[in-house]
Image 1 (cartoon, rainbow, N blue to C red):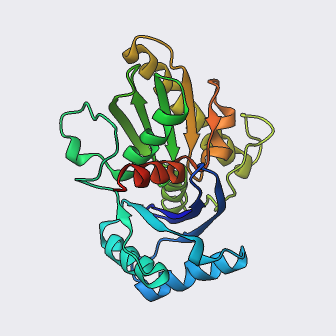
Image 2: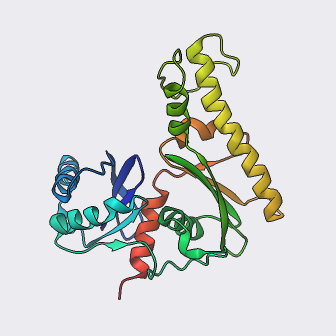
Image 3: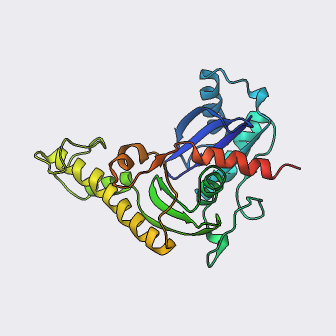
Length: 257
């Protein structure tokens, strides 16, 4: 079993992944650029203790991080916690994924990790929708090659921008209202955020299918906002909330001597 850490701009998702790619437990902690390795190590250890995980059973760790200033801090935190250096997904790490884009070195590690898991677990071609601080829609062609993605503001990012820039609109919980036609301020906002975000994803999925030249065999959804938004898409989207953690295990396996 390894410790898998997926660090995004807002949250860090942590999970223990077995050799059979079973993931338990899974928990999230805030991404804090001011925190230290001791702070992160303590938080992760506390969560593992709550789930009664014996850290001596963890034989390694893998990290995907899109916040460069936090990467080294997490590496040191893992060393404090497990006494070993984690695998950090990046240049020089074997993934088994072909990146058919103009500049493969610019692909964020979370996109690679999600694509590796999708390649191993789902039919091709496929599309991956990852809804975090940003929403990314990635495509793997029929030969399981990563051929590109689209990036748009995430659901929380859009909502924060809306409430920060308007004096009368309140902070709201992201959930679908009874009708897409809102009859109160809160329901109007919920309708816009939920159905508007779902509509944006649907539109991109249609265009991706046209670009692929065939309907995708699978559309996979992941990320913190995915459960609130993707069930309202007109396309059938398979939710896999631990996709990236499973991808980290697969990449870790590929890099063992």
